[in-house]
Structure formats: structure tokens, C-alpha cells
Length: 159
Image (tube, rainbow, N blue to C red; front, side, top):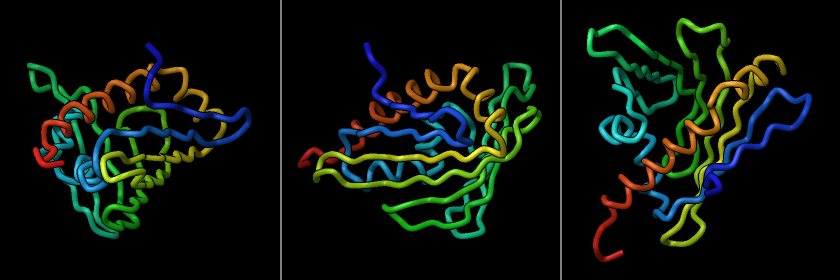
């Protein structure tokens, strides 16, 4: 089955574009990215901080059964326009990857469908290419599938 989340990485460029259409109204898609309890459900990470304001910040982490940190990411939110866009930095702690810049654009397709477009800008083409060597595409597709499942259950019955 072909992934529903699409990645585009043009040769020699420092960016990745990620697009996904969801069978969700725009406000539910946006909530999935901005409400800590929802982010935890579809991302599978604990939300330590999520301040959805310009100059706010966020921090996510995953720990194993022995409480050892397996993954931690953080960033600063530079702009936040409800149901439209979020501009933020993203840093995976304790990895060789430098901070990247992310532009998340949310768009209504119909009353029942919406689209997310992410532009991730890396410090170098090499950093971008190293990210693509990881199971990154599979991971984001799986997370977005989980987002669709969780948020579909949150849809009001009258929609």
C-alpha cells in the first residue's frame, strides 16, 4: 500500500516538503498539532512543554521502561496563526543533526477534508540527505496514519 504522506526532496536542495491530506475538518487537524494530549496520542511521545504562542516553545520525549531517555526534541515557535500555520525550529537532542526550520501550513480542502504541507529546511544538503537515510518517511507516514485514526474518533457525530 502506498504511503498517504508524501515526501519531496529535490536533489541538491536543503529542504524536504511533506504533504498529507486528511479526512478531517481543518480545526481538528490543527488541534492534533496544538493540544498536548492529542500530540502525545498520535506521536507517541510525552509532551513536556507546548506553548502555542509566538516565541513559545515545546519539548517532547520518549523514555524506556527503565526511564532512560530514548528521544528528546525541542524547539521555539516563531509564529502561530490558528488554523493556518506554525513556524518553528526543531532540534533532536543528542544527535548529530543541527536545528532545522519548519513551516507547517494547514489548509481546508472541503468542510470534511484538510491538508498539511510542511517545509523542513536543513543547515546543509548533507544534513537533509542524512535525515532521508533514516526511516523518516515511514515514521512520519505511520504518525500521520495514527493522527487520522485518533482524530476521526474526535469528529462530532453530526459532521
